Length: 405
Image 1 (tube, rainbow, N blue to C red):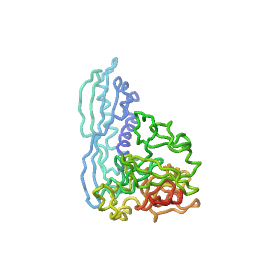
Image 2: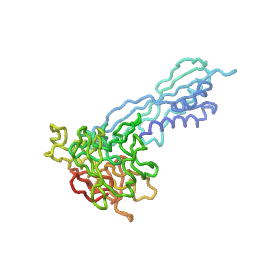
Image 3: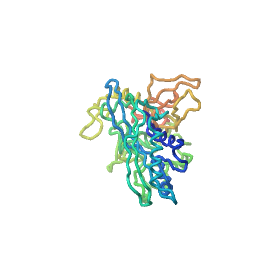
Image 4: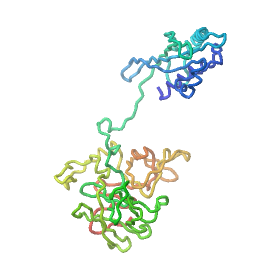
């Protein structure tokens, strides 16, 4: 049974009545879903409204599971007195016309196997409306048989824990602009507001930074809470990178060093504050013996992620660059594609790929935009025991800098 089967059967009933020579063309035949858009018409003229009302199911075979379903549909007739025409007489004529038209009918193109055609089970008078319309109801049933389709669920459903697929409140899948991760706790830190003015009411002092030119994504790094206050001037033209020193001030701010990527020398130290959020890989329960007295990740913690990855994601990877494309079908030039921001966490099935003239496309089992295929080189495999950054080699909090981004 397809998702639109019931809609198509309702439409079959409407089409059959409209095409029947026994139903005058002056009668409006509508599905209940269409009545709302035609409310004025329905209240003033002669109408037949079709609607699905329910089903009864019976299992005829358990393995594989096969059902018979008896689907019920109602036809609601409303006819109004008009000049010398009696609404009652006209309604009874429509009842007979619908009975002769629909009994024995089989809906085509509905994606189901019909084992008993339409039959009219009941017919009754339901009253007179405020508009002096005589109303009647006919109930039709059709019996279908179908095998239960197989629905492929994520393995996390069988395990009863799908939190890794949908990060909860306080969890981010990528670092914000200028952000760093505290290696001990997995918490995300952003530049702390240090200018003299008070932050705006909409943002706090730990709102982080953004580009001064948000459209072109260039210019200076300015504070979100105060765009007039510059954190770093034109970082694109003066190659830099950031490394945490793993040291804190008395008020809990993290000390981060800004390095010159050309001379490999520190430029200055800046202060970062805790956003209260964690990076996703620290929050998907991949660690054992995580809880310590300090609340962080114990240095003795064991990585237990191989089985978890293969069941859920594939292997963890990070999208490189500013953005990359996720393709629905790399073999078709007209297939749909969506962009994924650089730095997003994805799951790559390294043993499932398609070789094309453009290159090798790997299957992406999990991403913020769903499943698809990505070209080799547009993502970077990520080790769970390392930190990563947008387009960078993994950055560990060492005293000496790594290769710059």
